[in-house]
Each structure stands twice: as structure tokens, then as C-alpha cells.
Image (tube, rainbow, N blue to C red; front, side, top):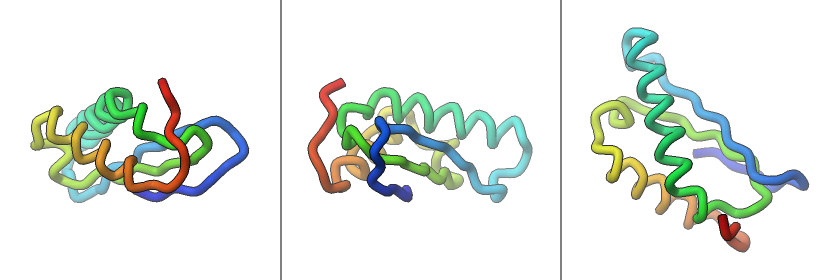
Length: 84
């Protein structure tokens, strides 16, 4: 995950490596990352721009595990947390 502080409300972008062969599989991994981000959104600083980069494990990992990994990564970012 890449991030930076901004003056605008939190926003996130999602990219998936081309090591995941086939556009259908890459899109499925991207959708899973977006869903995990929605579930973990409360751990995000209120003013940050994020780029989440998905690897092969994003396609195979259970959604609960993916959400927990993303929540831990977001909690490691400095700054107050948004109460969404």
C-alpha cells in the first residue's frame, strides 16, 4: 500500500499486478480488494490518498483474512482515525 496526506477526504485507488493472468481474474482480485477496503474503512486516516496494490494472494485468500490484513496495514498509517 502506498499513501500520502492530503487536504481532501480519504480516497483509495486499487491496482492489481499482471502476474495474475487473465483480465477476469485481475478484475475479481480488484473487486475483492475494494470490498475488503469497505469493511476496513474505519481504520483509515480521514485525510489520506491511498493506493492499494494487489498481489496473487488477493485472489486466493479468504475475504476475512484479506480484510484483516488491510485493516492492519491501515492502522499502521499515522494520524487520527475516521469514525465511519
